Length: 446
Image 1 (spheres, helix red, strand yellow):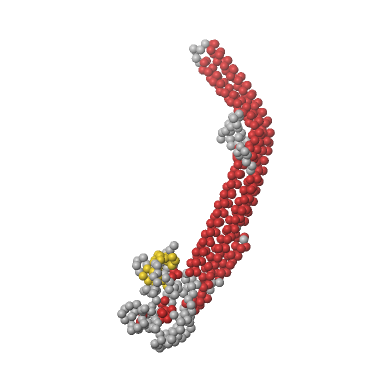
Image 2: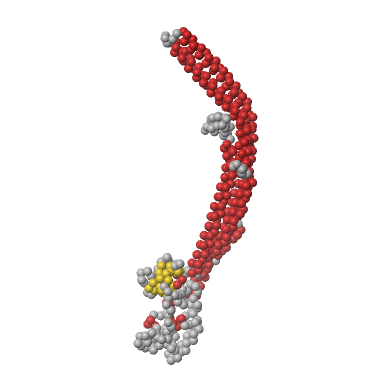
């Protein structure tokens, strides 16, 4: 490494040592680096705060989406509640991470910003006051020693040049003795040149040794002055290092949620919710609400009555079972329980209607949907037209009957008719197949 102290002191640096002329600049540069490191640490914390905020938002969106999917899906009972507990956990953890983001920005970030402003003072001409003070201190401490070092370098250069000249003169004298063409006068001149060069060597050597001794005498004072300025820089840097350590510990406390009581409670509650899931209880619930435990209007003998406008099929009787009194029809058994949010997941209720050969309708019924001439029954209500809507499947569904559609989650199809009372829609696949499907297995395409 080579360089110079300043324009007036052209001293070559022969090593990387701190004591070499100009090598104190690394210590001075450390002050400027301290200011930049404050900026770097603030940027680091700011980025982490953005990550915390983004993670909190993702947790919230994830919890909202999956809570809707689970509630609309086929899962039921205690296992459903255990599943939904994960979404509650995500919402609570999201709030904690938003608090972390707030602590990082409002406390840690601001603390570094304020400390930096107090520790570094900008000058009108640029740079920092602390940097200039260190630069001036080192320059003042090094200038006397650097001046003597320059004298040593000059003396050494003169001495080495004299030695070189002496060697050259001796060589010329030696060669002239073997040359018969030279006269005695020329030989005398060469001998005088050798003598003068020897005297120059002695003089330059003496001056070189003297300047070197003076440099050695000035070195202790030089080292003391440099140490004093360096120690001041060390104290300034020590304040920064200790402050960084303090801030990093506070950041660690804000990031470490394992020591937050509410964080521990979230997962303790989650574990309890999961452990409350009871397969036996869920199976018992399904048996009572969706299985053999359900009540049933078993077929009974029904007298024909002229008071009836027309007889009803079993499917129509199920639709009319909500409080309508029918003359001449005796119904036994308990009222069929109302289907809950999961009752439309399968075609169970739809399959409760018997095949067409069990229908009470007769072809000679004058009040059937079609009269003898094949025209529409004037007593039937007009069915309003339904606008076709494109929908997307949320889950896989395998049709249980010939009139049902089958599709995979993500498939798109066209809804042709709105949901009926039993939770079924009529739709058409892209291949042209038309059939029924459970309404809550799809969602409209926005």
